[in-house]
Length: 599
Image 1 (tube, rainbow, N blue to C red):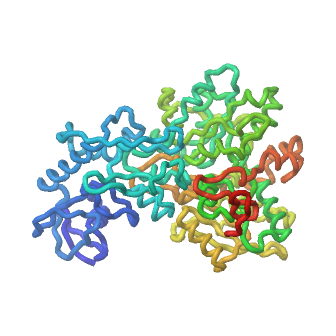
Image 2: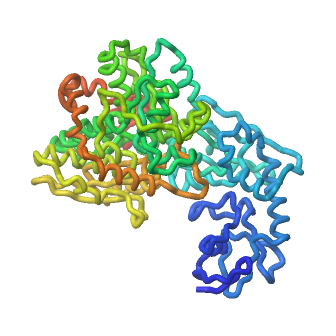
Image 3: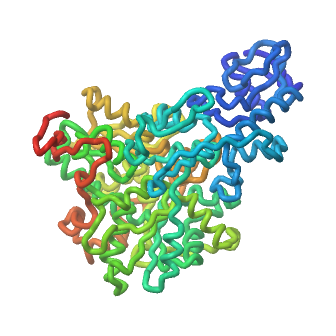
């Protein structure tokens, strides 16, 4: 431990702490732009400079350690002058059209400039422009990039994909897609973690809100909206609502006020997914198809894009079950359309999702059904939904608690926990237990697969005995953790029967489309809220959902029936990632109609 003084306050800190950490611990905030704990501690922005008594030059607080007897000033005249000049220079290379920026009011640079009372940019603006495909789900505006390098580091250290890189030298240094590729040619998983960790508005999702507004204005369209489980944990954060007041039922009210005809909870189709996926797993397991490698969950499109680009020879081990969103879309344009007396093409199906990759998922050929085109028509992220509430002039405090519409009204707690890492696995095991044992397990029997603050590796392993069947499972969130897990499987170091993967750390609650709180990771807390809802739910097993039973009795007959496979399952071999060679169903590369056995 060392003793030091920061802004005339005597404090004690661990000797391995940085000045910034010691100040934060003592409630003395030091401004910063580029810093991300353990990810981006490179002092690139130089906004966090402090003055240390006895040192002539200012030093950065994010990467300089505390010392015994150190006297630090975080806001001295010398520091304020230097910090103002630094921020003014950053502003000279930043498009300051804040009024038209999606991050206005939630921008670290804007906040910092206001805090420093910067009312004018003294230096000549030098804005670079790089062309970008505006149809791609992820949008980058090079004129807003401040070269903090967070996106590079997050994609490298957390997600292991290296989509971004530094380009050029000196004053012409910029950030671009790596390998001289366009973003559409890259192996981007569309997890959106670069967006949620960008301090400004240089990265964002493609805005699809106008598709929704056009649909609700079309008298010939029946607009059906589903809301993902993870949305209820975050949508109120930027609307001034307490968590207890930001229920999914108020989301339904907001959507109805906007013009939606029907509103549903995607947790219902999560129950449907469990029925299909759990029974698919038991069938593949009993046939001995999983002796060499496990069956992987397939509900996360970011993960599916990752395995398609990084481990294409393992695609056949993905569950063939569509994601809950796509299953709901398929049901909307078949059973639901028939029930309300409409043609499939009259249905405009919208999903409110915490995910950027979902925007890509709805356009994939594998989800194209001859009955009515694509299963889904539009995906809106949580952030887009919040902006829609504001643009519709809806006061959040006036929203009422209304129920989801009939037919697909009920959802189990098992479906709700889909939004947190481990939730899909736990929900599937509850139903698999019932299928094997003929009775329900205690609802929390498999809670060991849940994420905990103590689980730093991002990978959870467990084994369960169900009668004479021993199941080995694993759960991973974050693509860097996923790569480590798969590499251990491929090296023969680990063997599992069933594996759940979520591209975003913490699962969907930490998705790339969720509200942004710069410098804070809220996935764990949001996930705990879903588990709280599950614990207090009257219905905690997917197979006990009466609306699910009715759907099977009236339409699908049973899990994995012919009709269920036609509408609720997919073929992952019908599309390829841009840089991945085409492979056959055994994972072998196909080159000019010749099969090359390269695993």
